[in-house]
Amino acid sequence: MTVSMIPRSQATSTTWSGGTTTEFFIYPKGSSYKERRFDVRISSATVDLESSDWTLLPGFNRIITPLKGGFTLTYQEKGTSITLKPLEEDFLDGGWHTHSVGKAVDFNVMYKKGLHATYSVIKSSKRFGTAKLRFVYVPFVTEEKLAGSTLNGKPLTPDTLYVSDDGSEKFELNIRQPVSLIYVSIHDDGRD
Image (cartoon, rainbow, N blue to C red; front, top):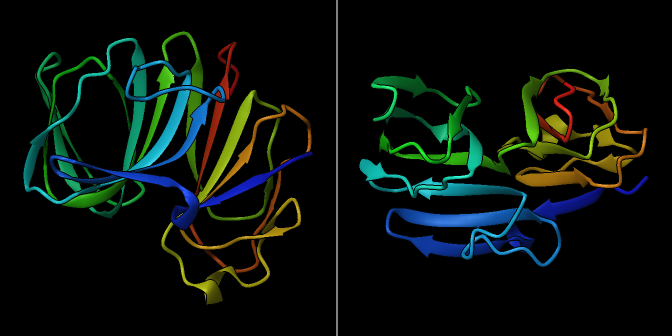
């Protein structure tokens, strides 16, 4: 069982009109976000503008959550708005015209339509089921709160994405102190 660790410092960061985007993971290998040629992408962006319109991503679904700060998202196609605080998520169609109000650092999962994703905030030790792709993201938590906590024996560190992309059985989180982590899984068949 292989679990890869990708800290923000080793991820790819680029600027956009409203801040900085950090791409932690893109699948399959050799994919391109710029060309919209990917199945799954996990990133984190700083939203430095009080108000912005999101890039349209037709053909993809998204899961979005603030890590710091928060924002209100208005979806033109639905005629609805939602306000999200840290670690509160929303699932949305990447092709929707989305207007954002509020400054934040976000966590963003993009996945091709036809794939299925789950999102949960994990606060205690857990053994996860199998999935095509599984991720644990450790947000901005202190090293002290993470002391002794592991994923498949690997120590947890702040602002790091942990990836299992081999579909094997073991994916076990051992949390020593109360802390909130993000778990995402991607499936071909709609399983949770």
